[in-house]
Structures are given as structure tokens and as C-alpha cells.
Image (cartoon, rainbow, N blue to C red):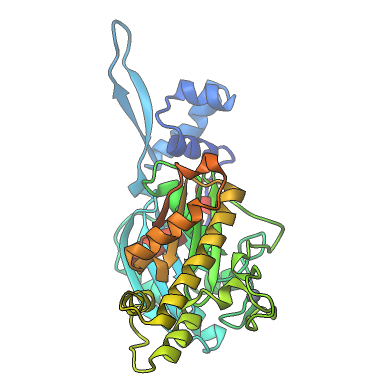
Length: 384
Ligand SMILES: [Zn+2]
């Protein structure tokens, strides 16, 4: 397939594309009103977008006399982006259109202790192979969600404790191989962004708590991903929940992540009954044992639900999202656990928020991971 390495946008293009994505419908006239740009300027921006196939114009019905109105309609298929999610030992790669809708996806696994260069090589090879198999629109670039804070320019991984990576210029390394623009962002923020922008949730303020090797958090408020200070993320997983608790990978003690994460739950399950299958669904196993009345499992399940509810309530009180999604091991956890977290959260949040609160398990599919990575590329390379 054809590849374009350069971003050919004019300064106002992203603004127009964003308005057509977020507040349709628009005609040239309403775009002029919304942006303050003259009709002539709008035509100068819209013309090339139409000739490149990114927009089309459609007549809409008129009442009474006069010419039919023409509205501008985005053509999502005119754009291809690559979405990647890098996990601790897995990569998920696929292609989407301008609305982060996935048309192909693949997953690969790797040894989390492998050298950075080997993992980058695996990502580059997988991206190349999905692009070669595709005959869609030219590729605009690659967006990657990573389990780490990134620099302000969206090009470098600052520090991933779980991968043991520090200051990795992942965009430079992949661009040298792929000859396409590559942008990175924090994985859970990219998940929140994708759900807020392109998910069909009828809310655009979405918080996301992802629990796997660690406990990550991301939030998009009114569709905008939340960024703290440079290189900063929201470290919900490193909130202290146990005084003098277990030593955490961050160097502190008693972090939430030391009580609610897959490695912790696996260790606790092994202490109850070492014969269980560690490759299974850890929360399903725990829930089954607790339902049978195994006292240590009942206590562990209660603890996990309690800690998660406290964390979720804090997030809800701070950001008042319309929806809170629980991903990773909670995306595939038994429904009664999610209901229990929702109920216990409700008891701890401001009364005005209680009725509207939605706490749901996230989409655990490969496609949803790819869509999150792609939303980073779309945000940085098309709509900003
Ligand atoms: Zn910690």
C-alpha cells in the first residue's frame, strides 16, 4: 500500500476535521460561523480536503423554496492509521480508519525481559506485515499506547518499571524502521481517549482503571485526554492503602498496586491452594472459591472489592466522569464483582453523583486495544 511519511495538513485543517467529527452536521456557512474564519478561507481549507477524499458534500432536504443546503461529511475510510498497544509481554497491532474503527488486528507475545531493541524489532515487523496485507487508504502514521509515562512531544518512554525501560526514544527507533510518523502515549489514557471519542457511551467524560501487572489510570474529560505536568501521569496505583504494607515496584510501601494487581492476586491464590491453574482468569477463580465459602478467598475478594471501590470513589469524586470503565483482569471478571464495586463506590461518592454513576467492565477485545493506540495517532496526526 502507499505510505505518506509527511503530514500534509494546513494549520486550520485539523480544526475543521475536529468540528465535523465532534459537532456534526456543518455546512461551509456554519463552519465559518463556528470558527470565525471567512467563507473564502473555509473554501480554501475544505477544497483540498474534498479533493483528497477526506470529506464529501451532501445535499440535505430544504423546506420551502431555495437551493438545497450542502453539508460536509467526513469520509473515515480515506485515512488509515496503525494502532499499537504495548503491554508487559504482549503487543497488539492493527489498522483503523479515521474513527478508530478496526479492520485488522494481530497480537504477539514477547519475553518481558528481552532487550528493548528486540521488542522494537518485533513491533516494526508486525506493523509492516499488517500494512503489507492491507489495500486501504494511505497510512498517516502509527500511534502506540505504552505502560509508562511519555514525554510531552509524545515520542519517548520515560520510565516503565514493569518492562525495566528508561528513556527509550521509541518514536525515533520505529520511524527509522517504518518511515512513518510514530507517536506514543500512556496506555490507559489512550484507552480512555478512544472510549470518550469513538465509543458509543453517550458520555464524553470517561475514566479508565486498568489492572494487570500493575494498576493504571487514565481519564478523558469532555473528550480531552487529561495531562498533568510534563512526563507526569496519574499514579492511582501508587496511592498508599496499607500503612507499612508490602514493598511496591515504585519503592514505596503499601501501594494500591500491591493489593490489587494480577501478580498479587496470583500469589494470594497460590497461598490458598497451590494446585490452581495460574494461566486462568484470576478473578473468576477467586470468585468461585469465595462463593464456595473458602474463608481466605472470601476475605481476599472482600479486600479487593473494598480497595477498588475506594479507588474508584476517589476518581469519581475528583473527575466526575459519566462512566468509569474497569479494564484488564476486571474486563473479564465475574459480573457480581463489578456490581459489588459499583455499589460500594456509590456509598462513598457525593450524593448528586450517585444516581448517574456508571461503573462497567471495559471491552477486553484485541480490537479495543488497537483502537486505543490508533486514537493516539488520530489525535496527534489528524485532529490536532
Ligand atoms: Zn507503588
